[in-house]
Figure 1 (cartoon, chains in turn green, purple):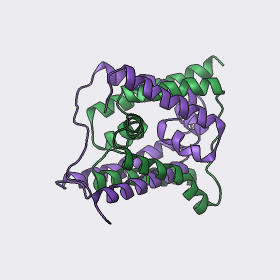
Figure 2 (cartoon, rainbow over the protein chains, first blue to last red):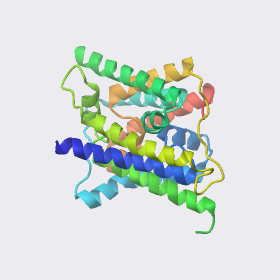
Figure 3 (cartoon, rainbow over the protein chains, first blue to last red):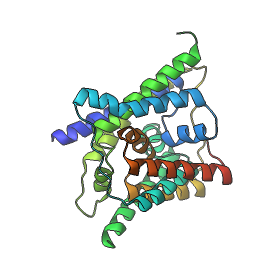
Figure 4 (cartoon, rainbow over the protein chains, first blue to last red):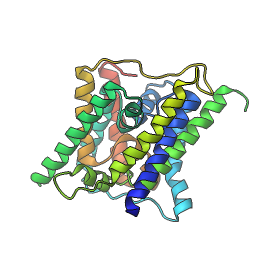
Length: 135
Length: 144
């Protein structure tokens, strides 16, 4: 039960972050969109500030919780590189990822985001299932 | 506060910080837990559904407030996606993204935030992800 409450409170913070960017700057807190625009050399200063904050988030957690957040990676490096290429390419092609389509798009009841989230959840679940079945 | 651009920078910094903290608290930073959430046919860990539910609830509140404002606090207009077209690019791109998410358990936000922990595997993932984004935006029609 506490596990679920902790997850929920983390989610509330993620939602708060999206609300801040929307109300203050009028922008969608979509990580792949912000990263893509930075890579293209557009909207640099606010985007860089957002990423600076994102990198400081785990440091803030370390200060408050007394330990670093847990990150355990099972995938091999070659698999992670394939995963990274697909995540980067796919999120730009689909105009968003978990944050832009998931957190902001679903909250705005965007039909595009509903389709995007349903699609990527389906392929992600299938991928985990197939990798489990063939390993 | 010298001007609006400074205010936007500070708001973006705070938003990023709260995002990174929320990811750390929620467990989303851990690819093993993310894959456990996606493993609905196996040892399913439903806790990350609470992350999404909490995030959407507060984000929806922000959206409702935003609808009552003619402009955001630090800019003269909202910059929100207007497209409503559900096309092949949206579906194919999301499908590809989901496959990558399933393989590694990382999506862009958690991957970037966990760079702070200095794990070499995360660096590999992020470099590949940025390369994937660049390949798309250079050689395919760039999306906004």
